[in-house]
Length: 146
Length: 146
DNA sequence: TATTGTTATACTCTATAACTATA
DNA sequence: TATAGTTATAGAGTATAACAATA
Image 1 (tube, rainbow over the protein chains, first blue to last red):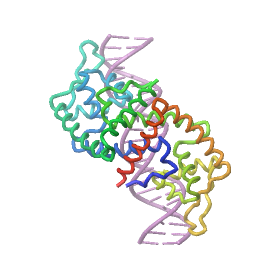
Image 2: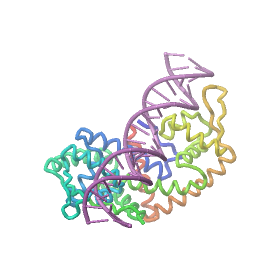
Image 3: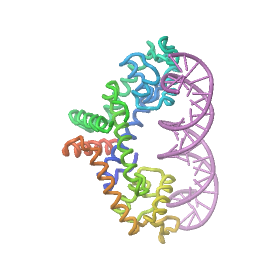
């Protein structure tokens, strides 16, 4: 139960984004903890499921993290037998990351857990406003890429 | 220049808040760096200016940080001679944090730097949408407090 | 020479525990 | 005993540098 945000800070985007992100992250961590998943591991699973097998390098780029950070994320998923590292025959330096059947089931449970957490977090906003918020964030992220 | 956010992640609030916060933070750090201010130091200055002298404990609560973290923040502001630690005569354990004249000038320059950074960051959104975004974040933060 | 995955290392941010001086 | 500020320490989270295997 953090303090109410002081008026002196409530008009700047920085503290607003910071506190919202922190509050949401806390909920996400708690929602995924029973599955032994972190938000990054869950994100990796979603990307691999949506786009098919890829190298760790490419996965890291997709997630916007360093390739050294991706090692721990994939380690976590492999320990859970949600993902397999298979040598890419076309480039034997690289791993092709494959989602297992177990990974697919884990992903489904993760989706459900995160959907609940997100609904709870966004509940104070009417649905139209929820979508508007996401749209606004997408626009800001896209514009800040260059 | 980070990767475009993958469709698999773009529909969840976590990655959106995370990337938006990170992008905005980068801009804020760069904007404040010439003043030798961090975002937290700037925030402390704004709170002290708006609410008047207070203890480090209370400042930390206002900023939503631990009191041990506040030590470094106030150290930074004191080095810049923007804030003075004065013993509170009513409770000699506590410091009363006073903004100096120099601190007031620094705050003004910080406001200007952050205003520019924020305008640049928010520019992709029409003004009405910018205010809507902040309103939405305030509502989510307020609701997640309890 | 360059790149993939990996390890070792370091840096940032923040918190917990223990100390001191007051209350 | 409890609290304000401080220090020492530890834990996330993430990055940089260097290395082995492969291209």
